[in-house]
Amino acid sequence: MQYKFRHLFTGVLFFIFVVSGAVMVTGTRASAQVTFTSDQAQFLADNPRLAFQNFDNSLVQPNAVILCPSPANASSDNNCFLPGTIRPGIEFTNDPSFDPLEGISLIAGNFLGPGIPLGNALTNTLFTDNFDILFNVGVRSVGLTLGCYIGGACSQDIVVSVYAVGGDFLGSKVVHVTTAFDTFLGLNSTTSIGEISLGNIDVNSRSAKGVLKVWFGDVERNIPTLSEWGMISAAAGLMLVGVFFAARKRLRASKQSDAIG
Image 1 (tube, rainbow, N blue to C red):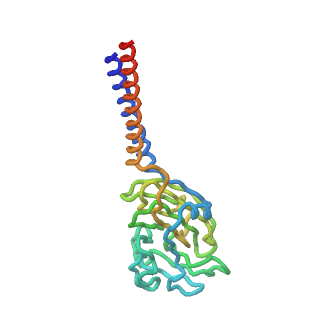
Image 2 (tube, rainbow, N blue to C red; image 1 turned 90 degrees about the horizontal axis):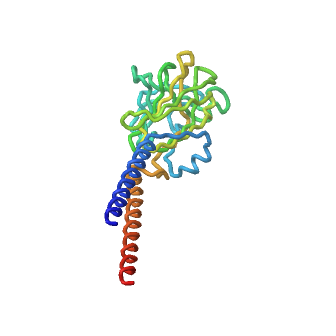
Image 3 (cartoon, rainbow, N blue to C red; image 1 turned 60 degrees about the vertical axis):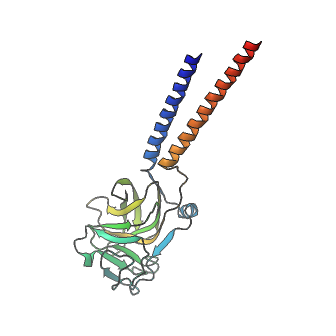
């Protein structure tokens, strides 16, 4: 009987080991996932208290387009932005940055007509460049209002690529954008985001690409982290061990009762 219990206990331990390994692998895979949505209202409802960035307090004059030094961040002090106009923790730049004086452009609202774009927008300047948004704080939730500009009206597909802190690729999404800058894309990641890059689909679809509004922050996700998966598996293991010893105690009591009888 002791031999059977020894094997049962070994089996329980093996089961715990397998479950722990499985959930840790699952947790590792989940940590590299990013999800996208086009539902702005739902995204903002699901991700409250995000920091908000737009460019309506910039120095561009109405119905104008001006070139801005790259990158644009909280310390920028130039013809486009005063210090503090850009919130801390976020930065806008072009890629590759061959000429920082012609890296990005600030487009005033109504430049192309009433309500186009709906406010001041920031884009790359050279149509062949990517437009990059960089984060230097913990960010796992980002909302973007996207658009494009080709010196006139623009309507085309672009690719939005997401990278983790450290450069690991997390995922990408092709979206259709226009000069109205009214395409919303929200994304949630289970790992910190370091960069979001707006790029052309191919060499024949060139345009300046950029953003009208950005929401960003680190809202607690309901997806367990790797350490939380470990705690869950440990709790499951302790429960199984408890069941094992309870069964053993019961059997021992039963044997003693039989012996007394």
